[in-house]
Length: 246
Image (cartoon, rainbow, N blue to C red; front, side, top):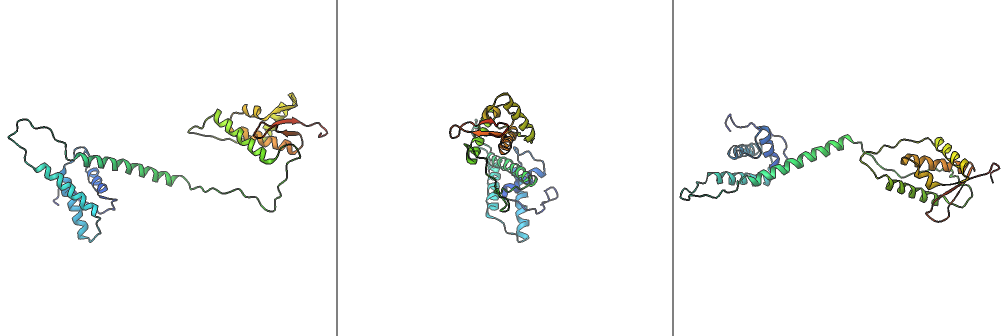
């Protein structure tokens, strides 16, 4: 290589396209107008340096060198001067340019996901566990089981999700249970029996529905309300208990 040629260090390239892209970008060459003779000489000089250092060179590097030499030879072929009208031929560099563009796009995408992976903390899911020392208290006697409560609550969440589809940005704020307890007290003062679904439909977010559900469990635990369900997967009827608990 003479002084005008590019002095190439020896970074680790992922393949011949990576090396070509490095040569083009480092010299700010238009990828759609590659000076094939210049790039070919620089590419071959780089392979020569690798051979001098006894580095292992993958076969694909030599395949690319033969491709560059073939394209270069096509430019050196003489044109036919005996034909008046010469049909325009395809540029022999077109296929190589398309490969370089596609490789450049995928390289940028790969760098983006690598950066995202480094920024986002690693999260690991864990199954819920209950300490053996803690005894699970059964629900007060009534006409509904804990499994039925959980199933009904999941249905409420699905109804809310359909009514308010997921968006790209989701913000969940904690709703104080005491606020929901006051809300249920207010509804039950107006009517002795209310529908859980009708109460949930008035909520603005999933966090409000969760707070409402926990408030319902808290009032049931204190024997202030009864929870009833007419059919499987159906609505929950919340009925105000009398002062004496009956």
